[in-house]
Image (cartoon, rainbow, N blue to C red; front, side, top):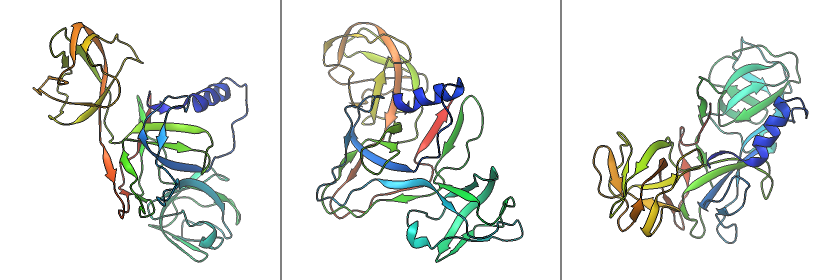
Amino acid sequence: MTGLSDFYAKNLLNVATGQTAFPALPSVFLALFTAVGTDANTGFTEVSTSGTAYARIQVAGVATAAGTISTASATITMPNVSGFPWVVAGMSVYDTTNNKTIGTVLTWVGTTLTLTSNAANNGSGGTDVLSFSIWPQASGSAPSSLTNGAAISFAQATANFGTVVAWGVYDAVTSGNLLWWDYMGAFSWLPATVSSASPGVITSHAHGYSNGDSFVFSTEYGGVAPTFSAGNYNGLLTVAGVTTDTFNVTGVNTSATGGGLVRKVIQQSIPNGVTATFAASTFALSMA
């Protein structure tokens, strides 16, 4: 189910229980999927790199400052930006040497990194390691969450990317380990029950869905799938018969009741010639 991959969940548990050391900060790369798989990183269909100009986009990584960091200045001397073309406006900057938040990227031109305002904290010296990420530091509780503050653009498509339904982040530009994945659209999972009817009626209080919306159904965190007499609730489904608290899937009849979770999904077609750009607040992550 969406969220942490099996790989990353196991590593975090091993760190939390003192069995392995906390790993070095990964470089993180954003991938787009036209079909989803499992938390074990099997079954996903990523946009093809063959003739499309598609490639994963780096959305987090580190660079070592070449000058001091001061709350009296919004600029930091850095290595030449030519070595860090993935750093874009809106990325958050965190000083991993000093464990302090620094600010948000405005520009990085040549060897000068300019923040949107003076640095929030002083550095520890002239060679602090800075992490850059499209996501700011997480906040809140039950759940804690974050959403990207920087917009991200892929290369202009030279062939059809297909219809993107989900995204993931990896620790490598190709292959690598899946760290996290989610469907497109920052929508919540909602509890739902399913009646025995033709078609089966899904009840989810104040769901906010409209006829024609896409959604998925899951029992991974509890519930039992209804018994079907026609069709099923696997994969991406289309909302029909909407009322305030109910909806159905045309032609999917049920012969026994069930329940689980539903989630709205945005499908994004990216045809040839289009430059796919995803705005701030598109990629949300949360953990309870």
